Image (cartoon, rainbow, N blue to C red):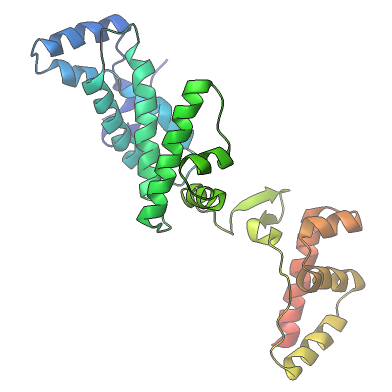
Amino acid sequence: MARHKVEISGVNTANIQVLTHEENQELFKKMANGDTFARDDLINGNLKLVLSILKRFKSRDENMDDLFQVGCIGLVKAIDNFDTSHDVKLSTYAVPMILGEIKRYLRDNNSIRVSRSLKDLAYKTLKLKEEITNTRGSEPSIEELAKLQDVTTYDITNALDSMRSPVSIFEPIYSDGGDTIYLYDQIEDKKLIEKDIDTNMAVKNAISDLSNREKFIIKERFVTGKTQMEIANELGISQAQISRLEKNAINQLKKTLK
């Protein structure tokens, strides 16, 4: 079967060499004896490890070329620090280092600016959590992590949340083949702000022209503050239908209020 050419950072992934455990061991011996080319051969022969990890991040809106280069940094660190005296394969040692390097890059390049103190607390918490998990085989609670670092549980939760990637309110969460439902459709609008009496009267008159079902949906969505799913369950119809009815009603209101 022919292999298709797929390039990442100028590297043709179809032609990447894959070294066996024995070949890796032999190159490490040459590297220890001063062979200047052995290190390069080890890096080039294990790039598939980086590619395998990149698959975990395909769903993210990230530049794969950048992540590949960052992953290669993790691979190089793994090769430079690998101890051949232990009965461990390079892949076993390198994969966590590559993954860790990519995750650190994503945290440090989050589009939302986070204070250094908050980042430091998040990093310390993640490291402490990993150490405790590895030692006793179970994850510590937020309360335990907070107590060990002499901070509040709110501080820990806030720090860890700050490291999460932001989600757009226009993220599609459902589609039935017609109208797409976006995340913002699930955000409750607690109250409708009416600026003045004239606007209030105009809106009321426009709403009076809607059908009874459209009036109910507009009232429940923008006055009561219910989500589309809650209204759908109440009326016994699909959320997609609620979305269409709501959009039709809003479009009619826009035309009336122009």
